[in-house]
Length: 123
Picture 1 (spheres, one colour):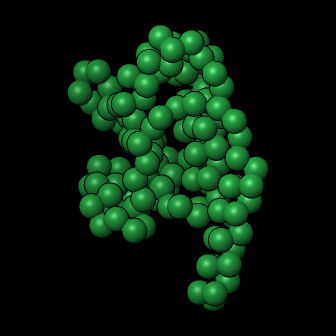
Picture 2: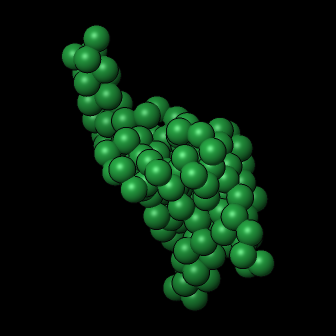
């Protein structure tokens, strides 16, 4: 079973690399604003998880420099996800609001919809 997981994971990563989307081009001042807004976001993910790949592809398509943390290979990221989000489930987007509150968002469709609405005006 371990070999099958390794093979499928490698295939997912290869296909992601092969068909990687291009990011959108923005004026430098607009991209700087997007970068500043994206600093409050962190994606907890597994490298070969198909739902995580889906979210990362959306981030790349929108040229969003969101920090990613691998909750499978990094014990610190795993602990942050468990203590903050409450579940070891990926993908998970950590959203730190301006008022200091933190929201943990699971489900790839929900994350992608959130990113599209938050960064639509910058496109």
